[in-house]
Image (cartoon, rainbow over all chains, first blue to last red; front, side, top):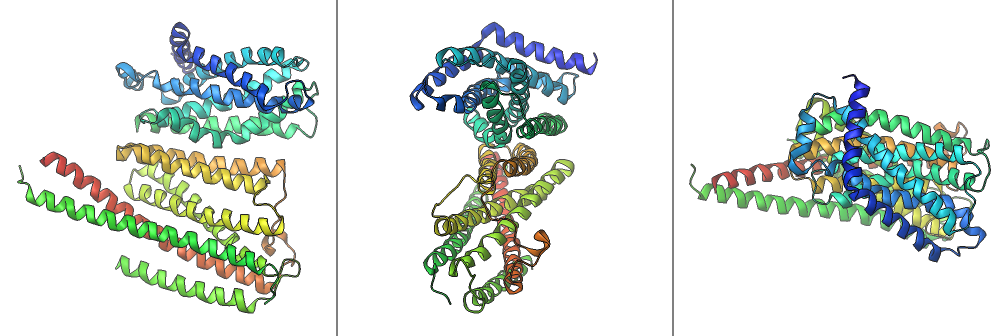
Length: 226
Length: 51
Length: 229
């Protein structure tokens, strides 16, 4: 098997097992909708304010519900010692990591794909004007969440307080990526293109993705094997 | 020395030294606790017969 | 021998601080605009630099640990991080007190303030991760990885926030600004206090490392006790 095949095999396995039970996906999705609903009490749903806050609100939802999915990423392998079997299997740690990160990416993207229209309907916003760019930005920010989340999922998988430690560790580190995503999403939902002033945020996202993916791919072998 | 804003200067310096002192105290108290535990464990190990 | 050196360095740092305080409080002129309160700065910037050295040292030691798997590096990494957190706390608190007086507010979401707070939280997470892992070698390995990630994240956060918004006063040291905007006596004092803080940092890290060594001893004794009993 080539390296890419190994990555896709890993991602496929994770996605299949998740989509069969949908345990993380269902929980995460209903959680996301509940938070979306709660926001109508935070800010007057019909006001201008909402549009200016839309990026921030949405990415808060994705960050919160995303950790539910990220938590399951490695925890899914704990019963029956599946993790040990995976580590013993003849694929490099980085392929295992990239596969898992891709699976997490797809799952969070599903949440987002559902939340965007729900958000638009509930709060009467036309959010599709810049759809292709918005999808690109969301993909970059989601990948940032997926890499860091998968990496720290590996770090915390054997801990008792796993569910609590993961968000506690990744939220502060994700701040640059989330900040960039919030800025750009607000801009794009308002229907404006990314101008010279905001291009810097796109760079932040791309740089964040590259640096942390590379760092994680190098270090994950040590985390898993020791 | 100028008396302007003297109060806040005092608060600032006091805060800095308080944090340092608290941290030093924390270190010494942890050290004592660990020393006591080492003594305790050593005595326990000496008392129990080796197998 | 090691204890004596630590003790001697501690005494020297204490004397140095007394000398610095004497100069800061009784000899330096007042700042034209701020009056007495600018003296907080001597306890604001130096601990920050010392904390950055600590975190940098921890990241390097963590990398060395992953490479060599020698306990000593892990002991150094955790000690430096903890001391760095204490120093960063001094930096944050003194800054807040200065801000209350000068800006009229305790806190503002300015670039440097925000990134300093995020840094603090990230390294707090490091200590919490250590608390949560029982197995010593897994604890050392995982926290070493986290420390390396944390250092990159801190740099990134700082950069991203710098582009975002800035209210914090800009650099004052001549090496940063390239101009002589600061009174030479004040600048000299800054370096004196920086040196004093670095010395104190070395002492604290050494003490903390000794503590960690005893902690290890306790853990191995406990394991032996379990084996016997």
